[in-house]
Image (cartoon, rainbow, N blue to C red):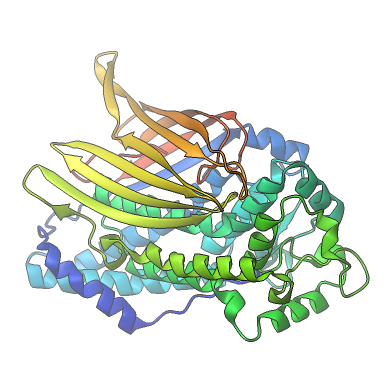
Length: 474
């Protein structure tokens, strides 16, 4: 991705904020705005693969990049909440609505400035790191140009310094991994929104993130539909004029015409793209004139389906829908483009008698068939150790049928098991470990399509803890 096209308007923000009153919230009288910070310091085998690519200290795993960006957004919302707690104390329903509108406006402005002027560690940086992860696990070196904010030059959303011969090898050895790397950028944005929604539902974090919900979702929709713009092919000409040397070129160009091109053509050699207009190297960016009618229509359909990502009460700040005194729920729909087509997911957030669950129903679709999957995660179990509640264990599991590629008529059963454990050091700090094993298959936030066991180790901290236990340890 070369740039993050996001527009912001206070009118849309205010419209999005108004339904907050429909929740009939309990006024906040104690200023309980829990802030959780997660930092996975070690992530294996990804860091082993990064070392093999010569990028041990210059490449972040998907989970590390996601955690860093989510943490910074959490800090933004926390301090804006604390600020408006002092200015407009939400001790009645009317003042609560004013408080939430104000917090969402200022938080949205900070998010906007962070993305466009901070760039590094923002959603734009995370988007590029998700692209890079698919290259790193294959030993392919790359560069995230958001770092130009510190290194000089233009800090844009681009992954450069990728050799043609590495892309030739990747397409030949693992064509589905190449396709997945192209779509991984907006995958990261939906995972960021999902993580913040989990904070709001399970931990009652009260993130004022309406603007980010709308802006990132709109960005994903606009980006997938960008190929329909009249100047799309002209923008590729401008891109090619800039990339006179191979090292300067983005590894994909605009993400989604290459995605649909290689999705439909897994057996076509990468070098069949032809020669770059400069006469040096391979012509990486794909114009709409190269797509077949079938490929073009498929991308049109994917662009329309992206609007499904707006289907959630979270989008307008409704974080919990209460059925009765013992049960609350929420729901969110997500449309992920991936290595074999797409995954249409419905996330159901449940809180019943203090037990919290995230149940996700997946529909995996390639060219020929739609097959199901299910995912379940629950809040941590608390175990006593040395007479104190020191150990938290949080299990989650996935089961699925998935095709391997776009043209496969057969689907393969598979699944994932994950166990997150935390050792509580004190009221604030924890040591967190995550063990995970999966069969062959695509999982959002996991760069590997092959069967893989992984392990993460890091720290977690929770400041200004509210009344609810944080449901996710990392």
